[in-house]
Image (cartoon, rainbow, N blue to C red):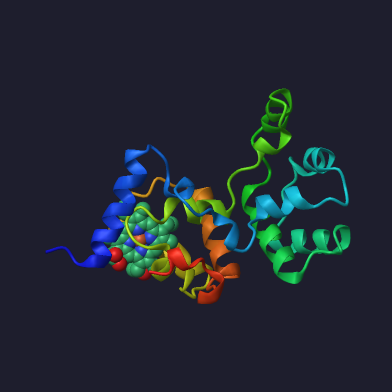
Length: 188
Ligand code: HEC
C-alpha cells in the first residue's frame, strides 16, 4: 500500500513527465515566492535595462559592494530586495565573455541572465517531494542550504556549482514563507 502523500508525489511527478513538462508549468507558477535576482533586475524601470546590463556584465563585486551600489543607484528597492539582488549579482557576474552580445543579437538581452533562486527552487526541487515541507517552510542559513546538496539523495541533482550557490543565498534570504502566502494546492 502506498501512503497517500507518496501516491500524490508520484502522481505529480508522473503527470509532469507524461506531458513532457517540468512541474513548473503544470498548474501553478513560481510567482507566489519572493522575487529572485533576475526578476528584480529586469523589473527595475528607473534606468534602461539593456544599458545597465551592458554596464555591469563584466563587473565583479562582493555581495557587500553590490549592496552599496544598489542602495545608491536604485533607492526604491526594499532592503530584502537589495540583499537578494546583491547576492544574485555577486554569484552570477561577471557573465561569460560574449554572453551579452549573443543575447543582443538574438533580440533579447535579458536572456544573458542565468536563472535566479526562485526559478531554480521551482524547477529543481519538486520532482521527488513537495516544495512546501522540504523547501518553503524550512528556515536555514546559507551554509544550511548548501548542505542540502551533500545528502546522498541529492547528490545526483543536475545543478552547477553556480546554480547551487545562487539557490542557497536566495533561500537563506527569502525562506521560510508563511503558509497563508503559499497557494492552497501546494500546501502538502
Ligand atoms: C532526485 C529526487 C530529489 C530532488 C530533485 C530533490 N530532493 Fe530533496 N529529498 C529527496 C529525498 C529522497 C529526500 C528524503 C526523503 C524525503 O524527505 O522525502 C529528500 C529530503 C529533502 C530535505 C530534508 C532532508 C535534508 O536534506 O535536510 C530537504 C530540506 C530537501 N529534500 C530539499 C530539497 C531541495 C531544496 C531541492 C532542490 C534544490 C530538492 N530537495 C530536490 C529527493 C530529492
